[in-house]
Image 1 (tube, helix red, strand yellow):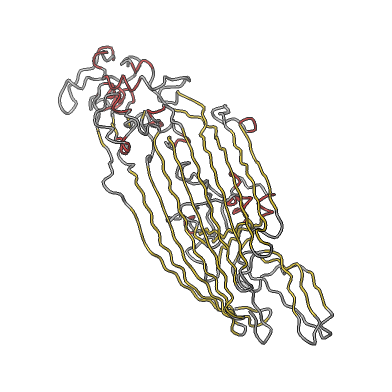
Image 2 (cartoon, rainbow, N blue to C red):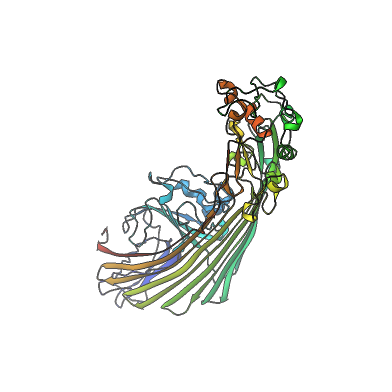
Length: 588
């Protein structure tokens, strides 16, 4: 787009290196070579025309000015060469270079391996919450509705540029108070190009745990390829990539399990007295202690015996109440992903690009006790997540650019961001609780597995002895459909930009995680086998475990689903912006 005063604008250019030429009768032809145009950038190229014959030409090759005079935002451009040559840190995620952006704090990988199976990273920018960041793939939303995570992480080998703006954004960008990140995938060209890549490590290259002094088995391998080129020269181009990740993370579980003597009802080594709950008064007074602090074998619950038969005995020496069980294992995750993109030059005025991206991690984080679940301390990283999970993600986008005249350009885009995240317990589909004698626990698949056995006091590092699998199971899916158009109108030295953005979001989550979740919870406390005047016994693990052996829980509870909750809403955004080039050195 240009006008009679010589002010010109090329809007919606593909990122790359350009040659700019100007010619007019009575003046020498002027050429500027090596003009680099990044994503989401305004590059000013002033052509100085000299009087002379048009057959003569002046060619200028030079660097772009360091000072950005046509934009007010603060931004950082990450290019393909950076992604390939700079260490990216966690799983070669492009977000690893967010740390190089001014105002960004140290990166973190939030949430569990199940919820964040795609390994999304986050940071705080300019003091804002991490929820205030906005990530897009070629203008299409790439965020969870809550802002907690980035939905799809493209392969570093598939990315052309990553543009990150942290303040004073152009009006067309919004929904952010921190950073706005726009990822552009590679496109094909007239040259057929491709690559093959592989990155990996294993326990032999890793250091042992500082406290555990072991190297749990594990290995990591990221491999794949890219290919791009012409389907029809100068008109139709393609690009595609495939990536496979084998991520078997070595881990060490430490937990507290009951000593062998306690399992047989022998508490003679305990400093606290074990009282018979079937004696005394309702308020606990007047109870009779068991002889020699030993519970008779015929008083031990057959359910307790069945559960203990599936729990391992201590395998390391430890003081009472300290972790006495340790095992090395690997969390296994396999991720397959690909991106495909087509660019079409329909005419001098019309351009179209379309892309489709897919990502699907599948992981298994084994419980320390198999189908009998885990203890809170014995779970991965102490978070209690043990089971299987999948996270299927699709991201699509179509961009159409149309030059209606020399002074009017339109960009229309539409796309969808979708994921389905499902996590199941280690005992999913099994009637574990029913098999050990707990009736009515396993009603259906949602309630399958082992009921949580919780002690609550004394066993602070491993409160649930078995059956614990924090927050699992869950079933979540989210879909955002987006349609937008951006118009650029040139009027004199004014570049007026306006547009709108429509989005429809659907978020579905089924999860019951309180009160032991859908499998239920038995809470055993010391008070059932103590007397009120014995403070030591009331707060001791020995008495709480004795309550478990005698099958006298203090609380029995369960959290069942009663609805299928979902959120659906429309969102509409609009904007207008006037960029006025007052002089070659002043833009408002």
